Length: 335
Image (cartoon, rainbow, N blue to C red; front, side, top):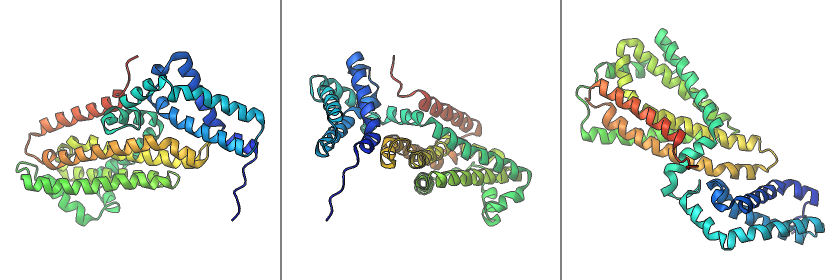
């Protein structure tokens, strides 16, 4: 069996320089301002970067690279060692326990919106890919009901319209609500997971799936509205819509982030680029899953209940505002 040949020194430096610079910058910040001033993401990266650079030092020594490179890595690891394992490491451990972005379940409440904000570009693109076709489908089917037949079979749309035309005066029994909750969880989580998983194809799969779902949902709503049941379906959807549609968009944003990390890794390897986005992506998918569970509960026990429409719409609007404020502001640290 052949031994793997070590890369040339210039290739090695080119591949690993980004992590060295990142560790050096963190060491300088911690030295000048103190560990307490570092943000949670930087704190979480510090031990991992230190271990990676230690491994790089061992490789450089084994490959007999030039003395300047070896000395540089020795100095860098020595500077970082005190922060990771010296007295300051107690502060580091304490801060990490408070809520590193990829941290424990207790930190999910703040870590989820922070991850969403860090990936705001992907979220904005996913929202556009979903809601623009949604509006197109809604308006097209409302003005020309036959448009919806290109999206969904007439045999499905007509019974759906009849169901919403009846209204919700009778509500649902607890047993029916429980049964429907299980169905909604299975259906909605499946959509979100596919929306995320298809991102592995350079993000294209997630983009197409977002467009398809936005167009389909919009066309179905538009068709029902065109048949005179628009007020009823709005009353039904408004309660859980912000959670459900928001979760689908966020799952799509996670898929787009994965795809972009593979298509445009920059100076990093694709594996390193994927690893960098992984913590945010995992957090976003986990948060989206929780949103879908909440949506399923609301849809099963509240949306089809006999509660007056005005109350349902007010609650739905309040929930949409709450989600927006949460994702925009939660997890921010006081300055």
